[in-house]
Length: 228
Image 1 (cartoon, one colour):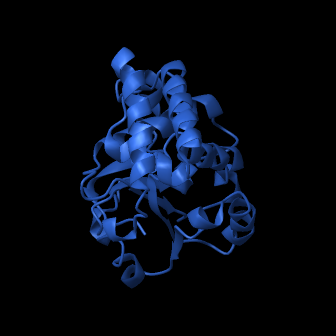
Image 2 (cartoon, one colour):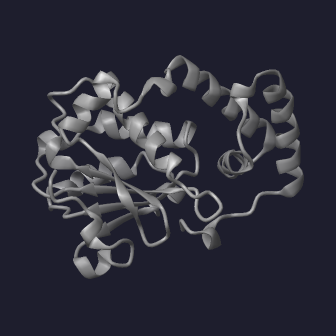
């Protein structure tokens, strides 16, 4: 699913067309540049040249307007969320070489957050994880939601919708696998709602892990932080 063997090959003629179009754009404005791996991700996600091309232009426009480049660990909003242990991009990778974003749900309260600030933090985490990708090996990510000590106040539907939107529009084909750990019975109803927002391809990437033996198929448990 996330390793190179699971990646759907794009049509070479379509890829060359998209590459030529983007070269014309990036020759005039180098900030518009996307490498071959990125172009292929957009083609896989949006199927045809025209929709992929338009999606790339929209992403480039969004990145400028959202000022993605400013979202570093020195940014006050980012620093505050890091200090609150909202999420972390781990130093180690999963079994397929994917960078890992670890999200402990217990540190999140849907009633005590600013969605715009949280969105900036989500984008920061996605950016940091993407930078860690060895694209020649794998160009997608592992996202881990740890539901230990989960309560209904932790369930933030708006945040989940925002993450889904970001992954589908501006980070297409970046999600390799989403692991859900320590899921309580309480979360069953929440998952029914969330699953309704996902297309079939994405929902198949979500895996509920019930024990350490299962987890070892995806990553070494010791890489998960115990200080959050």
